[in-house]
Image (cartoon, rainbow, N blue to C red):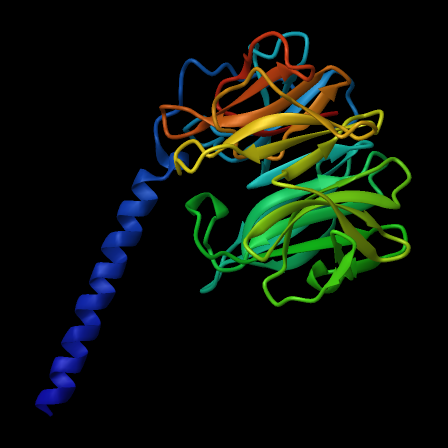
Amino acid sequence: MKRVVIAVLGTVVLAGAAITYTVHAMGSSPERQQADTSVLVDRSGGVRLDEPGRLVFRNTAPGPDHGKVASVSLADPTGPRRVSGLSCERFFVNAGGGLCLASAPGPLPSAVAVFVDRELREVRRVDVAGIPNRAKLSADGRMASWTTFVTGDSYAQGGTFSTRTAIMDRAGDQLYSNIEDIPLTVAGERRHAEDVNYWGVTFAQDNKRFYATVATGSQTHLVVGDYDAWEVRTLRENAECPSLSPDGTRLAFKKRVSTDAARPWREYVLDLATMTETPLAETRSVDDQAVWLDARTVSYSLPNDRGGSDVWAVPADGTGAPRLLVAGGSSPSVS
């Protein structure tokens, strides 16, 4: 009987600790913090994905709108933002539709990939294992890809991690929920290994060719893939989270330039014809899959000193200087 009482008391103590932790976590969450009064919100209209000249992003300003999809005018990105009711960890828009990668409730880390129409109405969802990390659509919206961390670890920590990357052909209703088994050729030789991890897919205009990062044998590689042939091959080492330019001739990517865990990466642009890489004027460490605002400008998010992140832009030719686009934002793309 005494053991039963002790066990019950122990359960009560643990439950109480769990409740205390949960209440504290909820109280300190960005959604429950006081709204940032410096962030102007336009409540007169909603967010649409077919409206030209709008930068769509994830709102990271504290307050009840934290995590929701928002948009601003590219002509005045510091102006009032429109905020939707859709919450995502990662969002991407193309061809008047969007892909929302969001965390899902449950005892284990899990996510959901939600496809939305131009008015952010859900048209399809896919349950996904892991913690949301990357999301991408092809130019016409047919091809989609997303990446999650299935262990909760991050490559930013320099330790062991595991990713799961999916590719979906929406026209053919074909989903590869984990592309680790795609035949891989490294430096001309077929590679079969258990440590293969992919992340950061970006699609060409033809919906056949795609680029991504693969990690194997303690090395990261930029790979080019053929969706129809279902195979990939390496192009070069030390290139992560590629993003293809609108004309398909260049890739923005992050390159590991330091062993300093706080500042490991720098953003570059690779000319695919000459394989010449150009360091961009942004010298801070960018841990993001950048996007192209246009043929001359690359955009990405960086952490700020308020516990959130901001959206920045920099010329794609290595000239100029970084400029702040949106304070309190992440995951930018152009409608």
